Amino acid sequence: MKTIQLTSPDSNQVQVSAMGATEGARRATRFTSMPDGRDSFVSSPPDPEVPEKKPRRKFTAKYKLRVLAEADTYTRPGQLGALLRREGLYSSNLITWRRQREKGILKAMAPKKRGRKRKEKNPLTKKVAQLEKENRRLQQKLKKAELIIEAQKKMSEILGIAQNLDESYERI
Image 1 (tube, rainbow, N blue to C red):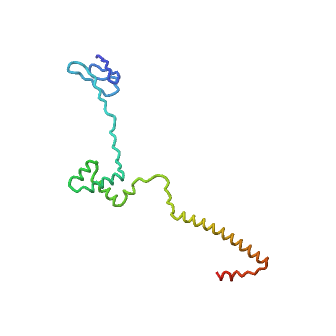
Image 2 (cartoon, rainbow, N blue to C red):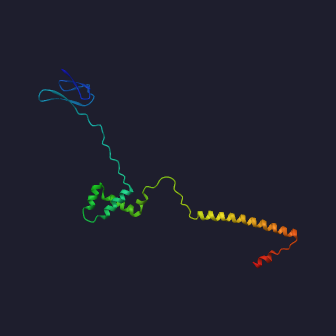
Image 3 (tube, one colour):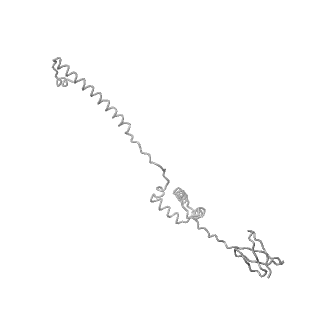
């Protein structure tokens, strides 16, 4: 029995006997004879790849609303089917999205601005600050006036001048 040395495209050397059996092969290979008498080496490894499952599609609320708005404008037969084929959708998608739109879920799904929420300024804040400032100013003015009145009372007592404060208030 005669052994033939063959080299495969990936540089693995394989020994093949004249009867066609392989020895020392790493993969399933077969030995074939060509019609013109030449021997050829044919490698047909099985595909180990498992077809990947397509990921589930996710539709944004903006996309759903756009498709629904477009679907609502169609009135002639066949237009809606063309839209569904073009977008790769099912009619059940439209039914579900219409229900979501009626419940207001699609507006709630709209993206929101991230970060801290801005506090709304109270429009009366400036007015309150102004009034508090005026209140403090008037309280200081009142204290000065009370001190002056106290000083005047003491001066009138020292000088012996009688004061009728109740009568002076009644005249005013």
